[in-house]
Length: 551
Image (cartoon, rainbow, N blue to C red; front, side):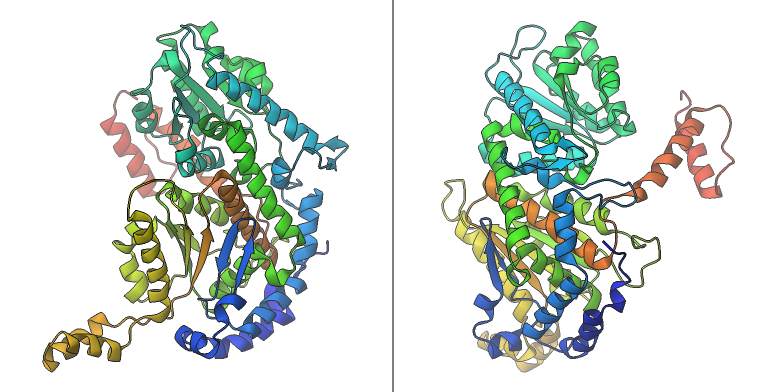
């Protein structure tokens, strides 16, 4: 594919800039009043999900121009190149094939002479066999007891992905297996977990592609020391397994190479939950459910590849996001799942989108002259309503919102689901409509307040509205629908990266701090006072050494 120029040079981008001059004055209330068919015209279904994007400040011309931009930026060709295994990760000269991780067994995809789908299913078969052994207690600990607790030690995608999915699929969990996740280099994280598990019945998963990730290996080493206070070195192989590609390092740690689950350099960390990194998911909910999770993502892959851009859910979500970011100037996106089990989904999307598209240079290394990824943040919806929704409704900054909800509950508690959905739908309407001063006057008059009091209260009770949002619905939160939901945001992120012309699949921004931390740690435990840094950093190191003289 030819190197693209800046998106700002695109003909469609220039047309959108002219269009924005008119659109910035639109009111969503009026758009709905003017177009009774707005809802059916601006909704799309795919892979078990339903997207309503009608509560955005767009009309048919906006969408046409955005679709023109997608075609001008070769979104379809770039998509096809990714699925074909071309090395689109230009700074690392790698293919990007997380989609192959959820491909069915009969799909053929050969890269550099290797059938990657066959390789993927060989690992999946290994995962299936292992999880069944754990669940049936044919895999036992060093004292002959069955495994009751699984501790996943990883960081980044090796933690956020499986932790989020296990939380989301809580209602499908195998009852006698408890999942724990440790990622933080802060020892309090590991200590909190080790204090509640039994070495005789605990299985540790060490997830590190290279088996050299500093934070993960520090936690893994400490977990091994803790275990060896109870068991022997030869018992390690019954309680530690690895998700890695470094066979020698895995064996040196004490893990049997047969208990290593590999993945490949074309699997980025934030896209790795579909790989052996998803081993905790298979242990938590069973391999059959894990297979359903993969199938849901594959269904969204098929939709993304086959649907016309006009009805392509990831493309539309990406284009709406770009419109809000580059033309309406919104700097953040709030994720509001109205499902408690999706509590970790906003933090998962933080890594997916911000690590992928939080870039200030294009693929050719030139500085961009436009805004890229917005700040992604959020919490479960009903909690947000009583926290930061105040700012979203009446604050000085506008943040678009993605509402996500399941229409059916998996619990049997009366009245909860209808109350939850009522809140979700009401909030999206409130952000869109707002409340005018005249409407506030009418409400307060009906309460028999006098005019002086009403006059004082009206400014405080007026809501400007015109706040954009998307609503994503599924019938029920199942492994299949969760897989589709994650894949939807993966492809949205990819499309936006193509539009902006950035490499969505590297993450050099995480390296500088890690390199500096290694040097500073040596100084913290060293004998000499630090003097190689700025006065602030030197002072902080000195203060830490003074409080911990035994280091």
